[in-house]
Length: 301
Image 1 (cartoon, helix red, strand yellow):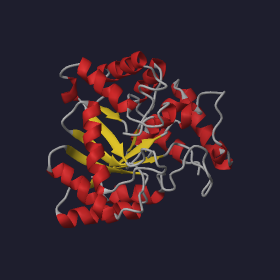
Image 2 (cartoon, rainbow, N blue to C red; image 1 turned 60 degrees about the vertical axis):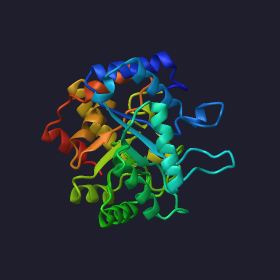
Image 3 (cartoon, rainbow, N blue to C red; image 1 turned 60 degrees about the horizontal axis):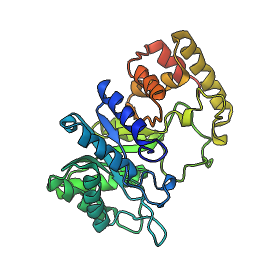
Image 4 (tube, rainbow, N blue to C red; image 1 turned 90 degrees about the horizontal axis):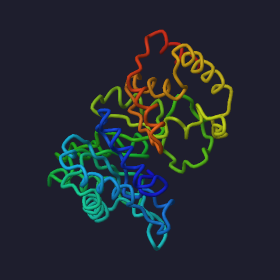
């Protein structure tokens, strides 16, 4: 989120360099990142920083999957841009210009817009794929029933369907119905229904944002949000600590490995602001959890 705002340009470039040198391929951003961290109150800084880095590294584009989103950039008049067809088309062009690319590998509908029928959004995004300026489509922070409606609409019209969903999840979960500080997406969570849908539709990937809960697993100065503080959390944290200590890993590294071992797999999106954080995440990508460890982690409800 913070490339080009809270994360300065040199650090942003260093993070991208190290990620790619380690074999990383997928970079996820959004047209609205990070409007809340910029004096203008508008986003685009992350895309622009990635675009500048791409320009400084000729040829690297072909090795990457570039993912960006539309829908929640603030308007000067108040409210959010939404997912109307003209917004989808306009912002796809602006994102391509900031990134300096001809094609967006994955283009996401970032948040719900119930003022725009989902079929109109699907038609506009599907047209971008047909035109060759987008390769795949994703849906972020939407309920599962709307994902199914959107996919059915696309398939009936011979358009590219949404093949990825992006939602928040982690090893521990908030109390059902509890409001989580800093999370304002009503349907921005992986649920049992999400997992069931992805199991039945294996071509639909599940991308998990905020998997480390802002570093709360390993930072004593950063408590878990209040909604996560319940008896179920205590039991799971005890299991997590036992596996992590036995393996000589941090709690966060085991959380990332656990997500990658889930079936269906949950692809964690790791937002890092330092090379140390990135190195820790890279270690997690190589961790192999055995069946006994997975059973131990999954046992506490």
